[in-house]
Image (cartoon, rainbow, N blue to C red; front, side, top):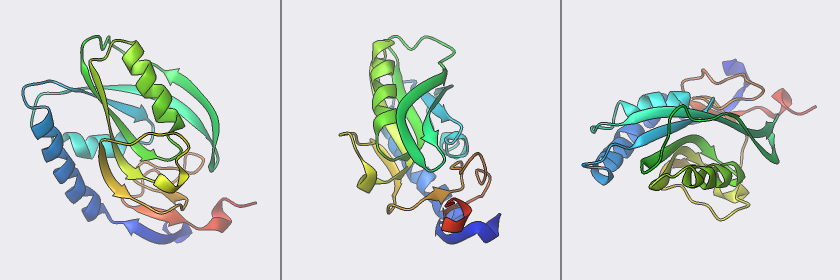
Length: 178
């Protein structure tokens, strides 16, 4: 698995340190509130787990399973495979995402959460890849801005593999090019 990585972009220590910083920002911004962190399955799970340990206020978590990818490319068709477990009417929501790429998926999710009655919706993303953005969308909290490369690890996958790498790395092209 590690032999398939061309280059490590972000180490585990760098991710942990950035999660501490993001946790402090979110704690400050949501003082006196109880936000709901909504992890987008499956990629956000390691990031959500690390980040929530660093937030020092009461919070809740929930999950949505949305997808728009097949292999290395976004299909543009956003599917909701698992919706929220509870109502979010009047709640402050923070969507937790592994990567903001084209922005299409998050744009649809944010719109859906507002239609469900959320008071506010903000986005925290481990990675931001602005070069690939198709829609006008910006995350409120960004872990790292990365170049336009196909990355895996720390939740990010290629065909469900590599999610368990403790770092973010660039996948060798021969692993996904046919």
